[in-house]
Image (tube, rainbow, N blue to C red; front, top):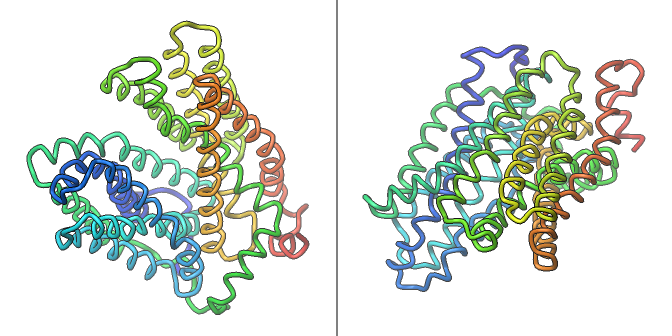
Length: 419
């Protein structure tokens, strides 16, 4: 196991860059493929009702394995598990050339979605272990910006590619990106755990997860993440309906309205990377609460009190996403380090709690929209933001105090025993 990197350099950035290239490849396997789905349904002689099934199948695949990949990497090492995951994803993309029915294609989409299970539960855990704490937060913030390019360029690239090439060429491009990521990870990925050290049998996983769920500090810290992200997730899910159907915007105008929202998130991540060395870790979360709540209140006011709310809606969501960028990397670090359980297991548990939170939260946003339209969506956004603030004000000060005066606090191992 290598020592942790204290500062960023071109050499030690190659590992997170290779990881984020894999992350980008997995994400565009969803975003880039959707524009090609009409060609897929025509080739397989099925109706267009199969188009959204591709995304559903991909997300189902992403939910299948985090419970296993994280604990497995705790036991045999992060490096072999992640390298296997990248190779597995690359081959699953190439296997698209072997399918000749819609049922086989959808089954393969489930398999491709499993690539998501290796990103947070294994890859991001390794990044957190490979760098010192402040540097790890900066690296995570910078990686998030690269990953955010996928939902922006994926649909456009997919639509352009299927105009000049068969739909299977999308998967060839994705496989090529995954192959480049695999070469970079083989070359530069360090092993951040000692395989075999205090190795527990895989049957211990259930006890580890139960131990985590009994630790209120971990659960509350982990729940901060979906509560923070839900307004933006709800916007991504419902903004086509809000902007195109309700406000009569064109598809192009709808796409342009996403630029400041995602731009705010990117700006927030860059701001976090800039202040991470100068501010106590956690201060950016409190600073970010202002634009998060203020932006969403601005959106709610626009919906309730103006005839044309689109500009206030977009401005409010842009402010909110800036605050999210300031906060997310720190909250991820605090949640990961809130328990003495092995970090692969902790990261996997965080991923599963986040996915459950997103699923329940997006359904809540849908119901709020059905009940009260745009006002319901805006009010639900404010509600989740207030819950986030209340929860973060309970968990973040404790994590900050430990880092400011660690001698005044019990070690995490003892905290875990006392939970």
